[in-house]
Amino acid sequence: MATFEQWLAGTRPRTLTASVVPVLVGTTLAVTVSQEGDLDSSNSWTGDLSASRFCLTLLLALLLQVGVNYANDYSDGVKGSDQNRQGPMRLVASETAQPGQVLLATWLCFSAAGALGIILSFWIGWEVLPVVVAAIAAAWFYTGGPRPYGYYALGEVSVFIFFGLVPTAGTVYLQTSEIAGDAIVAGAGVGLVACALLIANNLRDVKSDKAVKKQTLAVVIADRFGEIWARRLYPAAWLGAGVAVVALSIGEVNQLWVLLGLTAPLLAVKPILVTLRAPFILEAHDSAAETATRQLLGVLATTGKLLLVYGVTLGAGLWLPQVVG
Image (cartoon, rainbow, N blue to C red; front, side):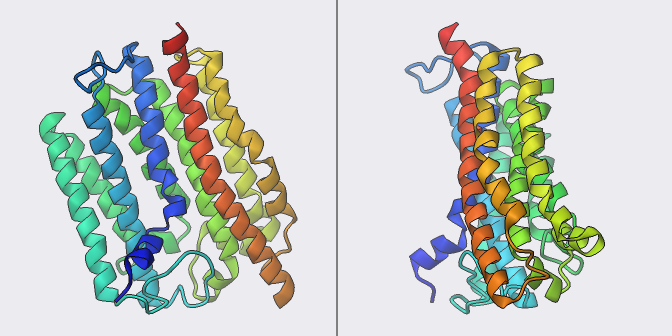
């Protein structure tokens, strides 16, 4: 039986910023949309903003991500895809927990997320529930089912949608019952940083994924164009995230404070250089490949932190104009 600490490690806590950041950015953007942001004594923001909705939305996002992390652990574990992979704890592959236990944990998380979706649907409107159901389906079929789309170079597309566009714009909708155009731009920026996190993970695993015929985008591009082009996906994602910040600063929000969100892309220069300069894993001898794997593990950890920096600084840039007038 796995210990509590091992189950916690199986949630891949360093990646959970991917579910926190879109809710944070979406909530601060909702403050901008409503033009009000003072917290009153009834624990709800004046205007249309609600602290209770924020908490429920954040819990829903976390449950979905923990669920997808357990689902990936289960599906990759039973397929044997995780046997030679380095990185966070894999409960099934390490035989720390039985596959059935991890599967149960997966669906407990998804069921709890579904229950929250029903509550929010009663509160906001029934249009919320299909989005939650779609997110659960996307989470399961990423590596689960007979033809998991994560094995066919579609992982980044799903992450962009369900860790960027949907939760960011969805959070704005849950707070204000409308989706401003800038919610899509902000969601695109968040989604691209979340993609950078997945890209860093898949670059590290490019050799082991190729060995088990897991066709991630990194594997496909490395096979067709060379590993350097797969590495260039990482800076491209950060460049797009920076462009989204600039677009927000001159769009409907029209505030220079938003440029605080460029902090993370600027800090990403170092992991970008590490990514581009590390030895190519597919071509390197064992010692060089191990060195590259360790370096890319460091890039993955740094990217998780920078995702939080992106969310906090972009959120601050959206919030400050309401505070300073």
